[in-house]
Image 1: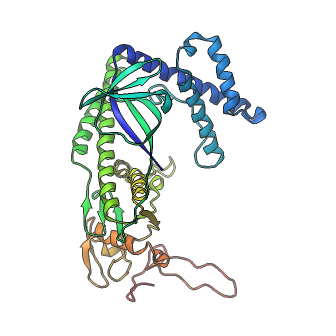
Image 2: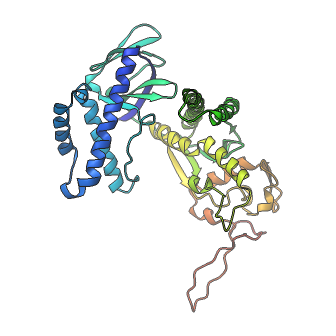
Length: 409
């Protein structure tokens, strides 16, 4: 069994949209009240979902505007909080944060309490308890057993997501292996020589977004004109996110269909996008250039692609392998010599040892592919000083590896 989501754009009536906002606001309030209760009394009284659900029953009996919202949506908010604390105590996430208006405008129904019907070839409708039938644009068929339904507000409107469980038996994986180098100028470079880049429309939208951000800066804080300008920026950002996600889904699906093993670098994106500002006493250098590079790295969506690729590979019986990223851009894929001088430019790689020439990103992708089943290749080309047997000092790795004419270490 695999879980898959089917997301569609809703077309609610004005009175239905008002109910959407009411449901989202009350569910957000219940979540925040339960979070404060757990943070204050949880350790002493061991508050769990059952105890907080009983408190919710008393809260609904006291306030009519809380009782007006469907109870299952509020219970789902308590389940979300219970799961968030479970992930926190397991060390997977940080301490749960309060939900905010404009950011966490969503609510969820159990699947057994929702019905779906088709209206015509392009439109369908979903029946939500205490809200009624709401139309949505039917862009693709659904399959599997319905588990839950989530309604969420995006910058471009309200969306509904159906979570379904699909009976699935993974086929025999392909024997083909591919290495993938994730970059900025070339978003994805494959060891086969294929290179994929983000759509050019993202750059055009980025220009419009920067103009819209400058307009926001000129508007008076708290004014309606500023809110409208901020909404325009949010719509452009949401459009960029949809285009980026669509690109990653298409690229990951194509790779999962063709290969059985996809090899990726273990990239520390958070460290790579750290600010170069420095401190007052020791200011950083090239701060604006580094900020531009950070934006480009985040815009490429490296982590998003890895997540999507992992899901699609597992669905088709394949696997994603993570290998060390050290010196992949400086290692010759032909002879294994490591030298920074071989990387002549962003796109050109000429090995100073054997003369091998290739696109720099493709050369790195081939090096990544070779490392997936050869654990010792993560230290190839690294010059190590001998240790003294009398003292037992550890091996030290030079910061700038020296050129080796013997190929791999």
